[in-house]
Image (cartoon, rainbow, N blue to C red; front, side, top):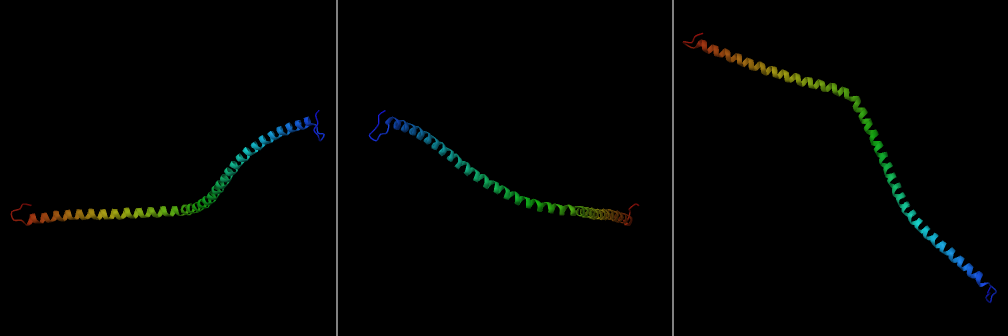
Length: 135
Protein backbone atom coordinates (compact mmCIF):
# COMPACT_ATOMS: atom_id res chain seq x y z
CA UNK A 1 0.00 0.00 0.00
CA UNK A 2 1.20 3.40 -0.77
CA UNK A 3 2.30 5.50 2.12
CA UNK A 4 2.70 9.22 2.21
CA UNK A 5 5.78 10.95 3.53
CA UNK A 6 4.55 10.71 7.14
CA UNK A 7 4.28 6.97 7.02
CA UNK A 8 0.48 6.79 6.94
CA UNK A 9 -1.27 4.38 4.64
CA UNK A 10 -3.33 6.49 2.17
CA UNK A 11 -5.79 3.63 1.53
CA UNK A 12 -6.62 3.38 5.21
CA UNK A 13 -7.12 7.14 5.38
CA UNK A 14 -9.27 7.04 2.26
CA UNK A 15 -11.38 4.26 3.80
CA UNK A 16 -11.75 6.21 7.03
CA UNK A 17 -12.78 9.35 5.13
CA UNK A 18 -15.46 7.38 3.24
CA UNK A 19 -16.76 5.91 6.52
CA UNK A 20 -16.79 9.38 8.08
CA UNK A 21 -18.73 10.70 5.07
CA UNK A 22 -21.30 7.91 5.47
CA UNK A 23 -21.55 8.64 9.19
CA UNK A 24 -21.89 12.34 8.40
CA UNK A 25 -24.74 11.56 5.97
CA UNK A 26 -26.46 9.48 8.65
CA UNK A 27 -26.01 12.31 11.13
CA UNK A 28 -27.49 14.81 8.64
CA UNK A 29 -30.54 12.57 8.13
CA UNK A 30 -30.86 12.13 11.90
CA UNK A 31 -30.61 15.90 12.45
CA UNK A 32 -33.27 16.53 9.81
CA UNK A 33 -35.48 13.95 11.51
CA UNK A 34 -34.85 15.58 14.88
CA UNK A 35 -35.68 18.97 13.33
CA UNK A 36 -39.00 17.64 11.99
CA UNK A 37 -39.74 16.03 15.34
CA UNK A 38 -38.99 19.27 17.18
CA UNK A 39 -41.33 21.19 14.87
CA UNK A 40 -44.11 18.67 15.53
CA UNK A 41 -43.33 18.76 19.26
CA UNK A 42 -43.54 22.57 19.25
CA UNK A 43 -46.95 22.47 17.57
CA UNK A 44 -48.15 19.83 20.02
CA UNK A 45 -46.85 21.90 22.92
CA UNK A 46 -48.80 24.94 21.68
CA UNK A 47 -51.95 22.80 21.30
CA UNK A 48 -51.36 21.36 24.75
CA UNK A 49 -51.09 24.85 26.24
CA UNK A 50 -54.31 25.91 24.49
CA UNK A 51 -56.06 22.78 25.70
CA UNK A 52 -54.77 23.29 29.21
CA UNK A 53 -56.00 26.90 29.27
CA UNK A 54 -59.35 25.78 27.84
CA UNK A 55 -59.71 23.13 30.52
CA UNK A 56 -58.83 25.68 33.19
CA UNK A 57 -61.53 28.02 31.86
CA UNK A 58 -64.02 25.14 31.70
CA UNK A 59 -63.36 24.07 35.29
CA UNK A 60 -63.57 27.68 36.44
CA UNK A 61 -66.94 28.02 34.70
CA UNK A 62 -68.08 24.75 36.25
CA UNK A 63 -67.17 26.06 39.70
CA UNK A 64 -69.08 29.28 39.09
CA UNK A 65 -72.09 27.38 37.72
CA UNK A 66 -71.97 24.91 40.60
CA UNK A 67 -72.24 27.72 43.13
CA UNK A 68 -75.07 29.30 41.11
CA UNK A 69 -76.87 25.95 40.94
CA UNK A 70 -76.51 25.49 44.70
CA UNK A 71 -77.97 28.96 45.27
CA UNK A 72 -80.86 28.12 42.91
CA UNK A 73 -81.45 24.84 44.75
CA UNK A 74 -81.69 26.73 48.03
CA UNK A 75 -84.19 29.18 46.52
CA UNK A 76 -86.27 26.31 45.12
CA UNK A 77 -86.31 24.62 48.54
CA UNK A 78 -87.53 27.86 50.11
CA UNK A 79 -90.23 28.30 47.47
CA UNK A 80 -91.31 24.68 47.85
CA UNK A 81 -91.80 25.16 51.58
CA UNK A 82 -93.87 28.32 51.02
CA UNK A 83 -95.88 27.00 48.06
CA UNK A 84 -98.64 25.12 49.95
CA UNK A 85 -99.49 28.22 51.99
CA UNK A 86 -99.43 30.40 48.90
CA UNK A 87 -101.77 27.99 47.10
CA UNK A 88 -104.16 28.03 50.05
CA UNK A 89 -104.18 31.85 50.18
CA UNK A 90 -104.71 31.97 46.41
CA UNK A 91 -107.74 29.72 46.83
CA UNK A 92 -109.12 32.02 49.51
CA UNK A 93 -108.58 35.10 47.35
CA UNK A 94 -110.27 33.47 44.36
CA UNK A 95 -113.18 32.35 46.54
CA UNK A 96 -113.53 35.87 47.97
CA UNK A 97 -113.50 37.45 44.50
CA UNK A 98 -116.07 34.95 43.23
CA UNK A 99 -118.21 35.61 46.32
CA UNK A 100 -118.03 39.37 45.86
CA UNK A 101 -118.90 39.06 42.17
CA UNK A 102 -121.83 36.80 43.09
CA UNK A 103 -123.09 39.30 45.70
CA UNK A 104 -122.82 42.17 43.23
CA UNK A 105 -124.64 40.07 40.64
CA UNK A 106 -127.40 39.20 43.09
CA UNK A 107 -127.80 42.83 44.09
CA UNK A 108 -127.96 43.86 40.44
CA UNK A 109 -130.56 41.17 39.81
CA UNK A 110 -132.61 42.32 42.86
CA UNK A 111 -132.36 45.90 41.67
CA UNK A 112 -133.63 44.92 38.22
CA UNK A 113 -136.46 42.84 39.68
CA UNK A 114 -137.43 45.62 42.11
CA UNK A 115 -137.34 48.18 39.32
CA UNK A 116 -139.55 45.92 37.22
CA UNK A 117 -142.01 45.44 40.11
CA UNK A 118 -142.01 49.15 40.83
CA UNK A 119 -142.69 49.87 37.19
CA UNK A 120 -145.51 47.31 37.16
CA UNK A 121 -147.02 48.79 40.32
CA UNK A 122 -146.82 52.31 38.94
CA UNK A 123 -148.51 51.21 35.75
CA UNK A 124 -151.30 49.54 37.68
CA UNK A 125 -151.78 52.67 39.81
CA UNK A 126 -152.04 54.84 36.73
CA UNK A 127 -154.51 52.51 35.16
CA UNK A 128 -156.71 52.48 38.26
CA UNK A 129 -156.72 56.25 38.63
CA UNK A 130 -157.53 56.95 35.02
CA UNK A 131 -161.14 57.95 34.33
CA UNK A 132 -162.92 55.47 32.15
CA UNK A 133 -160.27 52.79 32.62
CA UNK A 134 -161.31 49.32 33.27
CA UNK A 135 -159.72 47.29 35.95
